[in-house]
Image (cartoon, rainbow, N blue to C red; front, side, top):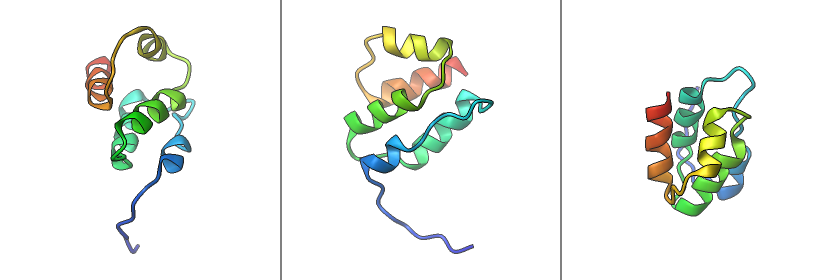
Length: 78
């Protein structure tokens, strides 16, 4: 398989969603692979791709402001 380095857009980020049986840890890892230079877009895309779960509730009810904080909490939660 040929790998190419390509820049991903915010649109690519918003296409990522957490699978029904996919653990949070795997979803977070995939999200990190398509990290955007736009912290706000990465933050919003990660949140919008989460399936219903306790972590999704935590994300929407806590004042985490950056993608780095969100990824840290995802790691802690897993």
